[in-house]
Image (cartoon, rainbow, N blue to C red):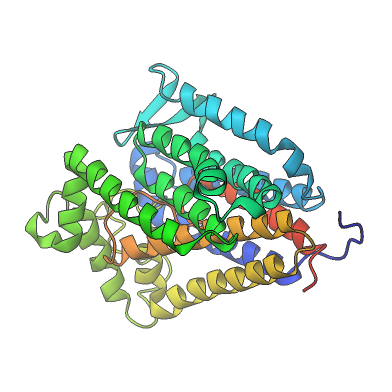
Length: 366
């Protein structure tokens, strides 16, 4: 068990707070028109995002000082709590339905999204399992099946909401963790084929998913229906050019791009700040990925390494999916852009995850 504690990764703190600052500015810029129309308060979304940002930053600095191996002891309990919440969210009258998904539980004037928090709980639990059973990971029966069993159960429960985007991020993160633990390539090929078959089944089981696939391939086939969001997103990115139209000068946020402060906030950012602004944000994410990998490589034990890999993989996968959707390279999945998109559960979860990563960095041999 590591004992010598040093200073946390200062660059990671700066990058995180920079992304958070950009996100707060863009949430206001993207949502002011819609918020003024719907709530007669142009700061409605910005104030709520600022509240959750404050809570998240306090949580991040608090967790930064909690020794990361503490989460190994609490991993099972946290996972059980998240599973209970996933069950509760499916109960009519408890779970709130938004945009066709029963993914939220109301808490007073706010709501929480349990599927967001199970991502971090699953990372903590899987890190514990892999660090304690790495010698069995090359065995399909003793290593791979047990490690993926709970992951697929959680994925199935998330799909009952349904929330394909969040489920995909969690599943992808766990697969990365299992892969770097030393699992056999042949097993992944077999699981990959099964995954493709399962994905096809999920798409065919819900007509709206098939519409999203076809609209991704040819959004102009249904420009006022399934292809509307992608087309409006591209209409935002295109005119941005190199330097953008100027902060606050977006045209697509005037009721063309639905709720631009959430999944498609990068489109508004690119429209207002251009290629330079978009590249700056991607550079910040690249720096975060680099620091996360360094922390994982320098962690003093396997649990810390797996935990760091899981956290940074979660962020990277979510960023890649969101940017892919916004730029028309992937089907619409409903995934937020970490630290930038409006959403209390997602923002708080990401800042807590960075707090864990910062604590690992205090023991990491960077």
